[in-house]
Length: 177
Image (tube, one colour):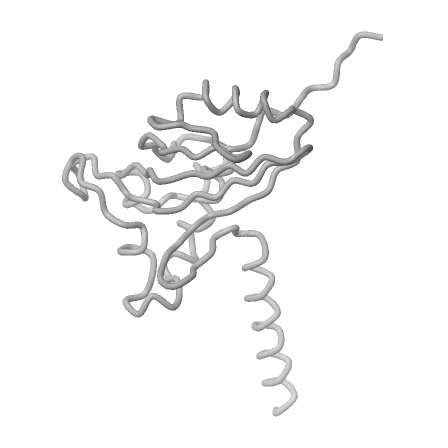
């Protein structure tokens, strides 16, 4: 019996550690940010032009080799094929999200840091135009951990959506010989 309990605890611990390895969310000092590094064949100037023309940002500047921007409110597309099967919670589909973005540029890669994430109401669950901190809904009151409800569907859905926004289109192989 003792061995079964030890094996069970070990399995749960390993499973919890494995789940946290690719979610890209960081919780430090009660603040949530999302960070991911992408590889690219584009030059720094091409990356800057891409993000400047993307329509994602209302404020945009480049300084010291990085893009600093303020994201326009974006929504979760509940009909998008990767998200549709997850049955998103109402808070995710009845609000938009916005925040501050820093995109560090290096040769062959770029790192996106999305912070000061806000939920923007559309009038259903949160007043239209009202902004609430992401942490209010997804971090425990003491600021030390994510709420259990966040670790279920919201984390997965936000990861998918954030990745969709910042991943450059994958170059298709050319058929010309």
